[in-house]
Amino acid sequence: MRITRRADYAVRTMLEVAGKGVGAVALTGEVAARQGIPAPFLAKIVLALTRAGLLKSYRGAGGGIVLARPAEQISMLDIVEAVDGPIAMNRCVLWPEECERSGSCPAHPVWVGARLLLTEYLSGITLAGLVEGKHAGEGESSLRVSPSNLLDRG
Image 1: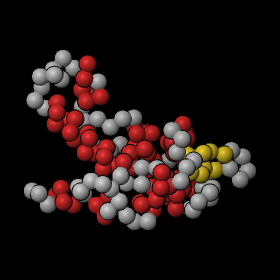
Image 2 (image 1 turned 180 degrees about the vertical axis):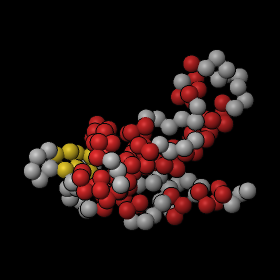
Image 3 (image 1 turned 90 degrees about the vertical axis):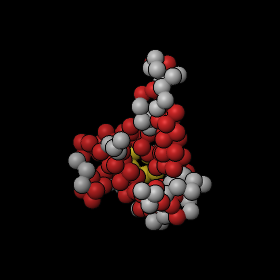
Image 4 (image 1 turned 90 degrees about the horizontal axis):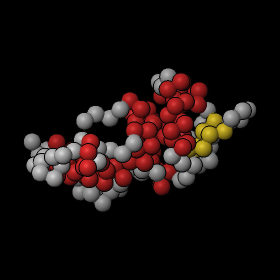
């Protein structure tokens, strides 16, 4: 599994906007330049984030983008799913009825469990925490799993 470029750019965009401060308007041209995101691609990402209720977009002079709700109420999961849809390791996790083997497949519960761990982890990481330099491995999530201790198991 690999995070999409859209999701990466969406997280970077949200961090840029949140980093401006509460209620501050970010200009999309500046966000694109500072984050190295092609402007046409950023426009599509902003549209998806706006439709998901994460950003508000204003046109015209003095226009730009601003967080639609407090950064404390926006999780990484919210951002990723706004641009990529629900996280799933395999199609059978989201739509078991589409897979004739989901009821008997020994791997199905593994995919379901992996999705649960990842979604719980990402939902425990807020945009505010990221701006402050915190992440779930540093006490912001109820999970006791962090990328570093997962890697230490090998």
